[in-house]
Length: 196
Image (cartoon, rainbow, N blue to C red):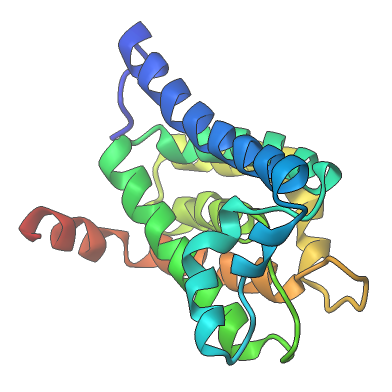
């Protein structure tokens, strides 16, 4: 069940989404102004030991202001819709998407490439919100899925392989896969969270 949208709930949701976005923007500011893009090396480099750490850091890092700007609004909207069912579920969904997207990139993206950015998480939220309605079959999930499809349906083109520099279609694809798998196994993941 989604949480009632009280002032307290909305304030908490705003703090969480706002906090994550603020962290991304502050990191980008530090990276561009002080470190001359040296933080970007903490992204995912497939099939390297150092690249594994990128699974943890890559979604927080961006190559340019334009890259970060393009990710900000979809992250805020889709993240907030994911957060409607509460902080524990949001944390669980985000963590699973984060890991599946990251490991997918590390395993399947070309070697000698660097992958950074929150788009894997965004595609994960997109996949989660669309497929949740199929697995749960309740009215709210269906309404949310329709809204998400109308607002962000064109994201699906980001799954196509691209040779454009700076586009990690593998991150998009495995983010989406992570979102769908999370929606499918959400009852089991909730139970694991309770017992953990």
